Length: 225
Image (tube, rainbow, N blue to C red; front, side, top):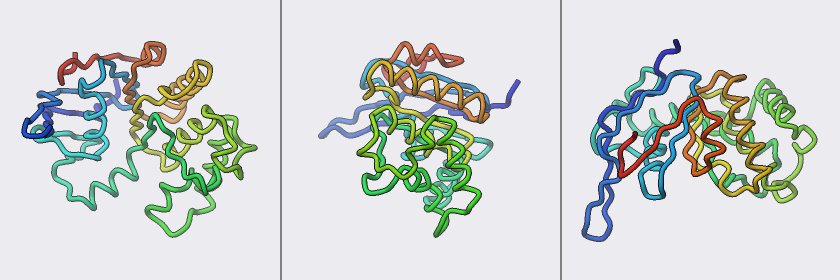
């Protein structure tokens, strides 16, 4: 059995809405094994995306601890968290967030440039290999505006993999796509989960995507079931 890559214990998070404090997460416990794929489903406003943001170090819990690959996130300062995030976590969102003035290849290499002034030949080669794997090897010099929605999301998936992260977090990755493109991206995420040996956590409203995962959990009123 693979060891636990992600562990969350007693994680709570609240936000202010005017003069009212709203608890979004209420003592969440979660363990995800290395190389496992997990779908988190539930109604809008139940706390799914908030949990994903906490796991991705984009925000911090009010209470509780999150440990990823043996590292306690609460013990890291801002710079350490940024370095850890860049090296260990890849993100895929509902909107692809590609930079319109950069080519496909340049967009994929953006996470690399957060740590170095230029991408090494090895990383450029990896980007091209991944583009070939997702069937976009002939698009590397295209701007995002020349791609279909499904193609742009496939580029976003490749970008999330460029630093060979241990963990991929995907927030409604097929929510803005037509049914055919959504099926292709969902299948791609699962195949890459197996091929690349990464851990995959997906927040989704799509039953079809959720059922592709190894495990499905439901979030209701800030609690995982």
